[in-house]
Amino acid sequence: MEEIWKDIPGYVGHYQVSDMGRVKSFKLGLERILKPYLKPDGYLSIELSLNNNRKRWLVHRLVLLSFVDAKEGKEDVNHKDFNKANNRLENLEWMSPKENTHHAMEGGVFTPSKYFLGGHHSEETKRKMRERHPSEETKRKMRERHPSEETKRKMSISHKGELNHMYGKLHTEESKKKMSIAIKLALKKKKENNLKSY
Image (cartoon, rainbow, N blue to C red):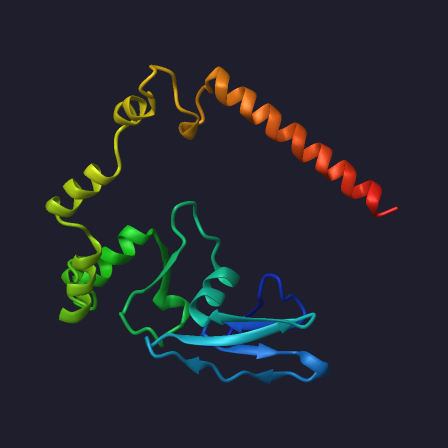
């Protein structure tokens, strides 16, 4: 069977990918097959560059993007045979994230408890996570330290029955007079200092 090559969207004239999962470059007028990088998670990736912009791509995505249009809601690439390094077009298909997870669970390559039930955390990490979430006793103490709006309102009322300026409410007539005098004195002092500097 003959290998079919197609331009990679966004890299037309610079890179192509084949239905066998191989990628080639046409940089500097030379045609050459690129060697993919095997990631720790088992997927093959390749670095493409255009106009000094480098980007690492998963090979399986390049194959499907070049040969098959994705449908809305199906943006995950599924390896039918569960082999992450087998990037032949016949082995790849678009799926929704839910379908892809379900397929991986059926094949035994994904265990939900490992990821969703905290199985991938060490006992030390789990202990630290529990410490970050306060107990009911701690929550109760926090509520006592941080009064409610009603409590704040009651606290803001002074002995004279007028609202205290600490909570940004009203000032008494006496405090307004004192503030006015203080502002006038400050302005007068500033004016005198400016005249001295001439």
